Image 1 (cartoon, rainbow, N blue to C red):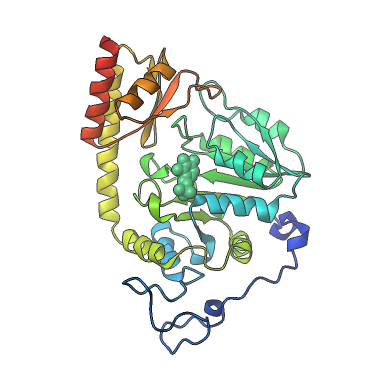
Image 2 (image 1 turned 120 degrees about the horizontal axis):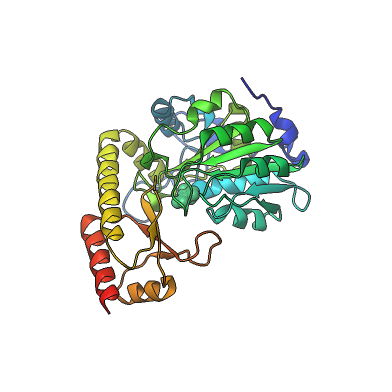
Length: 353
Ligand SMILES: *Cc1c(COP(=O)(O)O)cnc(C)c1O
């Protein structure tokens, strides 16, 4: 291991002796038996379907399947109620309110700062460079002993690009706390992401999600991959039944349909390429940034007006034009062929007005 850390020393002091809640399903987790231990309704559910039993708090079947797919051990995997739960838990486990801080690299995903604000933890922003890469030197020289978490989003939302692995590794080497790499969009990017680096860096936490390439945003399933000691802390602090059984079941079914996932990814990447080339033909489009995601960041001379006009046509994109370094930009999710045609048609008509 290139970098070894003492996880317990990073954990908030009041948690170090925490005695976690032990649920009925923690204490006995066989699947057959007469279950009279959890005060469930033994008759059944009011609505059609079997919803009367608590779900597996350890999500063991799903973790086992994901471990195979990701080349990890189940004890390196945390499953949350969306990635948002993993982000919130990182604050609750590792950051002392008011005293410690986290580093973020704007423009980036808004939840890191919101989660910091909710947990009363300061954020130190180190903006990306003009070409949307990490300002590695500035990041490293801004690290302090109280920098508990460094959030890196790669591919980044809303800019769409991957961060250089060499920069991330330098930051991993220097950071006094954990480095959290959010790979929500990694399935749309070339290469396999940073999971292989978990071997070398015990301070690396990787976030992924079922919300994007898997097409299951409604089910709220996020994943964190990290050293087993870190995952153990997630498990101690999370609510016992944090992922409902329906979501676990459907995620497990999805995990066994990798061919379908690959098909959808191919279709989305095709549409991304086509949409980009069509957009670039329009005079209203100033610039389209390279994307390793399922969205395009595009720059327009009149983004606010255009945004409103599109809304009037019933087409909703994300207005990012007030975000530093994204001035003039709209973020456009790659839709189906028909949706993309509708968007292009509307843009053509608007530019002819
Ligand atoms: C969409 C997205 C997520 C997904 O969050 P969930 O809570 O898992 O739906 C995470 N990170 C980034 C950067 C995203 O854009």
